[in-house]
Length: 316
Image (tube, one colour):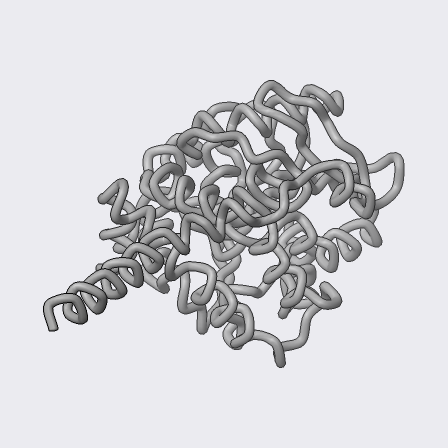
């Protein structure tokens, strides 16, 4: 009887050990982003101080430059529909993959303001872009674009924010737990996030999109090592920072700001509209009533028309 009990206890312990190890083991078994995966990448690669950065130019060789910064989980392909629309209006559009996403490298370290600004600054220098460009930021990319504009207000012609992060919000109990507890929070992120990512993207599969196959492309990110740690590092880094003072500084420096929000966005709260008004009264804000957080690709035409309308009115 004691032998049987010991056997059951051993099995239970082994099961618990497997449960504890599996999420981290799964991460270790994912594919490495390397030459074979990059063979299908459009565009070019820049060798920057923290690693390779994938980037692509869309549009005419001459024309006003627009630089686009994507968000937390969806790489630069999120911009392709919008970038094509901007290109048709004469813009020369630069899109790129943030570290840890898409075809770019996966360097370790906290993905905070300094981390992302270094990548953007070095890429712009690599491409010979010194000033007088429009900077667009989507979701987390809005926080990065805001930080860059605050650091270099003389270089940015206008700042366009789409469903932008950067005005500090409550991440929720689970998000706060993961963010504030290294170790156990890491395990929970690796255990739970892949399923949450798939569930969240599947919820949008029936929505219209200017990016063909975007849901499958979003989910493909989970195939590659370093994606989940990058998301976690950003949650603990730039997404835990408040960009309110940066926005105040941009307002004082006179850089035009256009913010476009989704009326049914369940990721960035509606309260961000009021907060932006408080810190940057000069910001022009427009709501796309039927759009959720994916408005750059689900409501591309509306976003393009808003940008064009504000240019026609001379507001930005």
